[in-house]
Image 1 (tube, rainbow, N blue to C red):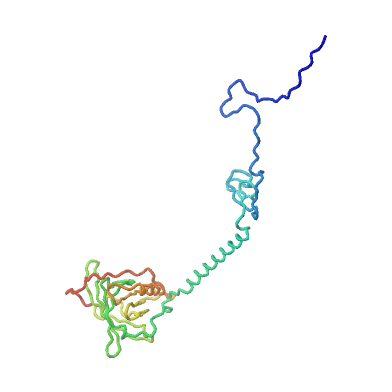
Image 2 (tube, rainbow, N blue to C red):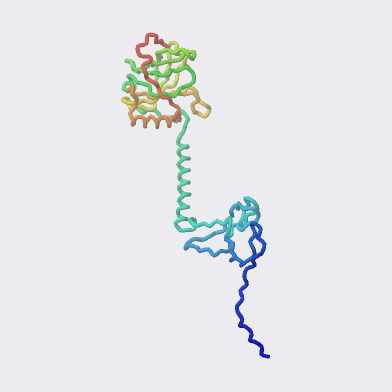
Length: 302
């Protein structure tokens, strides 16, 4: 009996098993396994020339001990490649190091400039500079108040016009008129008269009020001419009460103009600088000139 030859062997490739029953949701029948994807911590990374990753203490945002070495939520770990790792690129480039150093240099220069500016600004009244070689004769005439820093107590409110004069003996006096509010609801136009006593400095005077003004005001105030060009602007300052450290506790100041319409831009820049030197920047208010006291018969002498 002749045995038939065996069939040739063929390569057998196992096929995936397909279940006869439908798979439940979120379950995939076993089949050909997919190619496992390596975690990000073990992938080959392409490094750019000149870049270097340096492990630094970083804060991990994951839960538990993760690839970045984070100890719990918000834990501190030492970064390895993976989550929580931080690569310093700019700081380790030559230009990055230079830029980093320059940032520190500029920051130090800025702090030094701010510190020197504060150190130079001395708010003690004795350190305030006044007009050198002040000339009373050139200063005499009409001045319109454009802005003022108010003192404590009663004072002229607006429409303020001052007239300075010098007599034959060289003594200077002034008459200031403007609106005054009495008893919180009674507006009157008042004339205030004052005389000036010279001191060793030609720009520093003692001013004494006369008439009813001597009761309404404290009287015998310091009256300093901080700066003026005699033809355009003038800055006046008075300190009534000193603090223990030499700064002023109660002061007032006027910005005058020869022109009732205001100061030119060049003079405004100078005035703002003088206000900062007096430590009174942004403490002035503008004075209105609307003709309220022009030709009023009820003007009172204070």
